[in-house]
Length: 407
Image (cartoon, rainbow, N blue to C red; front, side, top):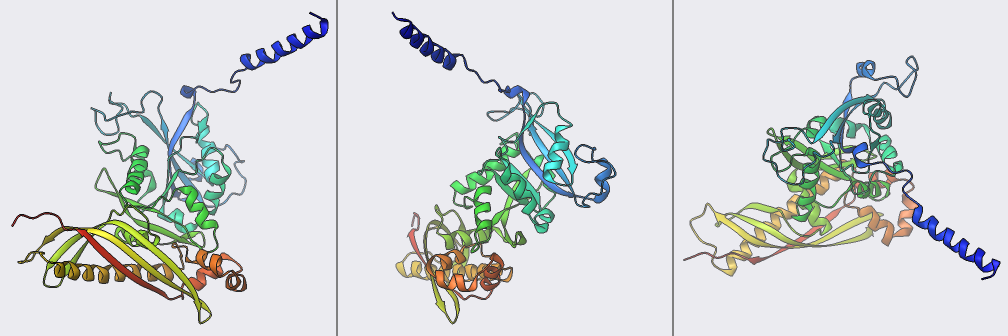
């Protein structure tokens, strides 16, 4: 073998060995990481500045008066459960909590998390952050600063949930029903299972950022509260305008929103009174929607055509049975009247608050670009116009099943 061939062989061998001998030089074992599972952000009174450690600024430096209290839920290695526990709620099966809850203060979220790092030994990581809960007051002040930090941070996943709490957000970091011992995982499972059952649209934090970035649409978030001691209730939608919380809805309005958007599967039931037949419960199983935008009188006109399918779940408080096609027609007519009124009222509510969570403005921008360019020069222009546009709704229902009843 010539010297040239030897050099080629040795060079190839060196490259092969280099590939096999490389390792994770910057690895950090999972036991040595402080994995933040959830964050709760509340307003803190200005006098709490004295509780903040001097970490990222000098003591006498002039600072913003606004203070945040951030509650972090950190996973304890080896204690996060994989199934139900025989112990009490919030236990790790041996009476010990699977999470460590830490309270910190700061003038911004980033500063608060830096203060958090001073109180824990292991480096903090947000790669497993699943839920961020903000109080209603924080949402009313605006989320621009919060969104700026989260969007810049590569560890924050776009499928993280951002929730608005009616109560103090920190309280939700401690609620752990027997079904789930980790509060954050329970919050996540509750919202995601609501999506599977057709009770909430799939609106992760990434979707919220896209909606807030669109000029023809405003964002919305789940609006939650604590019911009793260990129950969490999805109370409705928290919708925004101009980057701030504009209003909240009821739970039944979630069904109205999903009908306008045509989200499936259907999951909401409606209790209505039918003349001469008493009360009935109708469960929606499927939704179909079509949005048509036309320009009339110098402004957009929205025409909604909605078709839903449902089943007759229950009939009560009446001396007669639902036994004919005529009775079904009467029930469908009563549902159409009530559902149309509900959707119309919810649309008018969002118009009063100038919050186009339906994205009608995006239809105008897509199908009438000339009108859009002539009239809309910033997002606030569309929010102002949305308050005055006419919205017509045509809704129809087909009851597919009425169940079995022995005669």
